[in-house]
Length: 99
Image 1 (cartoon, rainbow, N blue to C red):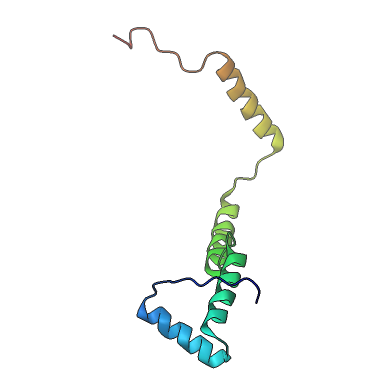
Image 2: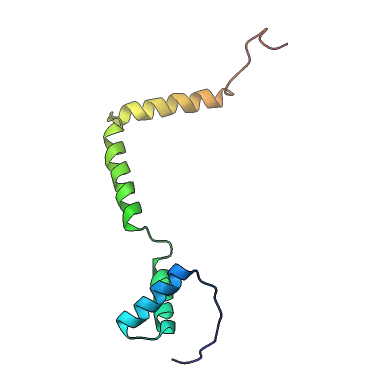
């Protein structure tokens, strides 16, 4: 290992027990356990956990059937109507409705 820097961390007792156990079971120094754990964690940054992935897939499976299926011509007509209304100025106050 090239260029090592000594650092100090404060860890709770449960984490220390796990660190000691991992180092003993793997027959490697505690510093190596920490290096490998940080490397593994760094690789996973920004990726979904298995639980998150399953939850999102379940949401997808639940929501996709709720998407109404309608012909594209109907969608285009509705969008054209919305655009036309927007070009006319959107909501207008009704006479007498404002003080």
